[in-house]
Length: 234
Image (tube, rainbow, N blue to C red; front, top):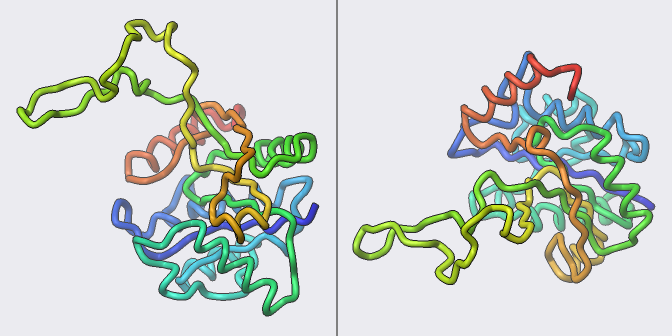
């Protein structure tokens, strides 16, 4: 089971400039993901790559143990570039320039600093047992979609889901959101179907604490608080 671990970290970020190397409890944000990958029982150090368009991010990633064999081309580092295009570029580059092929690609976004090596290992073990197209990390939503509203043409609040017969949370069906922490997908699905899911996808449930996704300054402060106050529990 040969796995390419890919940590995507482009320089541009509108919500929080420089967020991938923003300091979090004394370390750059990306360091937490690199360290989790390096601590995994199943991942090979030489296959843990950071894909970035920034020399500065590349140097930080190398410092913490990730490989950076290339700088990502500009066309894969724009606001419109997708994670799947970044994954395909990395797979093709590794095959062309290093002659390496992989069975699976593990995408670990650096904006999930509280995702730990145990989560990575459990996902890999689940894949070994299930042999599905992909395993994607999920978590329970803070707000159920049945409770969400939208503003109509008259500026009034109306139900987001128009045919909503659920009045109590306990009556609502179980719904989960993709938390962005872990994507483990067969490489043939990525290359041929150009997505991370495939036809047969399994969800890996994570709690909300470990599912924090850093997108703005508030998220950095929340993650920092959890690390400082609950270090023994993380």
